[in-house]
Image 1 (cartoon, one colour):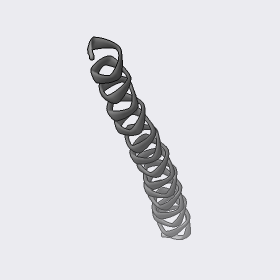
Image 2: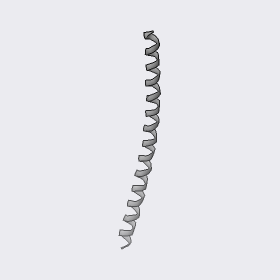
Image 3: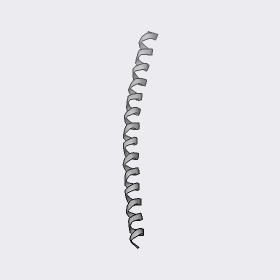
Image 4: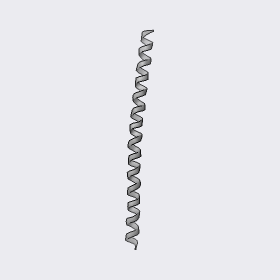
Length: 52
């Protein structure tokens, strides 16, 4: 019985850790997407300037 409780606690901690890592990765991806969008807009404006 004690072993089952310990395994459940370890599983809970593992899931919590994976959720935390996943959230961290989502934040990084969103930040990279924002930077990429800024670069795309900047490139578009540079293209427009060079075509004039």
